[in-house]
Length: 494
Image (cartoon, rainbow, N blue to C red):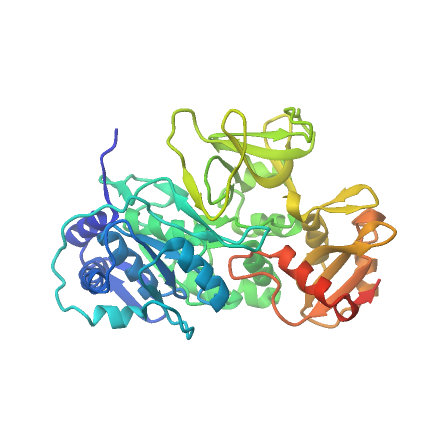
């Protein structure tokens, strides 16, 4: 079995064998592996002075930055666990998460008044000038991201694996990363996918380029400038890149790219195909799993062209579709997707603040609906909690959103169900437009794309983005907000 070492020890190893190699860049600033190692030793001592100890969960609410990576490694070096949250988190949600995490401090730039120390990375680093090595320590839990899920109430998802990595760096590690990669991350590090990719990049010893915020053209410019070989984007980012003027998009040289990953949200088929044709079928990769990581599917762009709309075949663990009566479903039968970790494997996660939905035999559900084809490729419909029952028919918002996003004037969209005396629910589309568009325009656009009962009965136009930086949309919160003020929030009927 491959020998494992702590994440802190791995950074020390990189600092010894490639001290001057770039570790993390953000904007004009770059730190080498030696600099990152020494600085995180100082920050770790500052954290210890603030009361952080082995086994603690430490809430971290920073935007994408070198400081985010430094804070994580300083926490790991004490044998504690980074517990990342959005840097835009409102006070009420932060307090719920702090209570779940029992964090001794919060590392963030929040202006909230809270009942424990609220400190920034520079402030912590200034507490110690000792950058010598610390005693080796391993965090019992490598990470503890949050999820609001469909209920809107936060929960922590404690990783099942400790804070360790391979002592001998593999030639190709997770996420198809190699030690020679230059990896661009415009997606938020506080989200589980971005966080895990940051961990993988650092463990491989490659050059991680963290973008402070996503901008479609700036992302292309960064790939060209750095000669990046690897990038991760979410479908919302892909859509904004694709909506750039052709001349703008095509002026950037992306020939250095070897891998583009997308996940975290459904990708409309038109957009997926556009990227496959543009970037290359063997370079575009998609993964489906929960933060819980019981099982995983992966699909290449080439496979997708043969199985349009699929999220791939199972590569880790097991998955199956289950009917409402509890029976296992056959090919092309739509049901709830249940997952099970590989036989004999330890638990991949533990919830704090929620209870897993478990079936006999160790099968668990994240609430997703879908089906498998005869070749074992999985196709997702939506979350059970987001499904809208319209006149007895099941309608999945993601399908409608994907169709609407094909319209050039639609920047982002969220589809929800609102009460209807006749149908039980009516479909309501909330649209962030990039130009002038009317409900009639969108109704005409959908006429030959969706069956009539799936078409929105009402539209609402908003100025603010409907998805967060990680491409996630909280439909339940959008629905609740409109139900509180139905008279003014339901928009124009189509």
